Length: 240
Image 1 (spheres, helix red, strand yellow):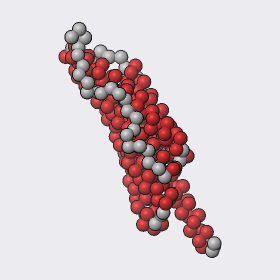
Image 2 (image 1 turned 90 degrees about the vertical axis):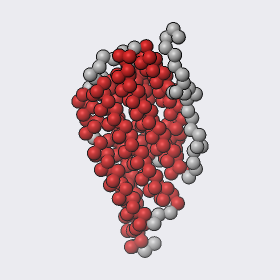
Image 3 (image 1 turned 120 degrees about the vertical axis):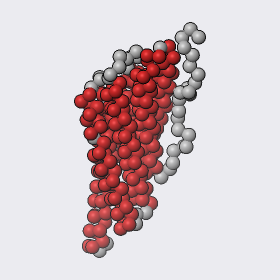
């Protein structure tokens, strides 16, 4: 290989490493954002809510930076095969991370409003759901950093537990709302919060699918594991 070619290859490898680094940096911010949002809800922590919301512009800025970097790589390097999969996946993963950041910000904002009401409902289930979502997000970002297909599949399969918990909490909240109209406002905010958490879990699963594709070149089945219960099942008040 000519000396000049070696420099070009090294430069290209450095660019790919930089791309991976920016994606994992973005993931780290989003992980913290989700953790702060969960703390804001479960512990009624206004300061944590503020931190979660204030992190959102940094996430958006990183997404734009990665997008511009990917466009440059595609234009100048014309990558093929494995490299092309990695570069395109990075663009899609940052899009998922940006959406996760938005959902975390929404959870944090809802927590501030929720704090104004007495809660008729224990937050134990919500805390458990938030913990599952955070664990999946951390695991999938570890998979991104190491291009680990096995961890990606673990996250992909774990989404079912998040869905089942969401469905259970959904039905319980609807029951509380039907039993006492005074519960409607706080329970409505909780419904939005758990829906945002469920969507965070879905986007973590999206990322897992992309990691698996980059690592193996194969696509996971379109029908991902889902809970058996419908969140929209008819709920009857106690004694009905």
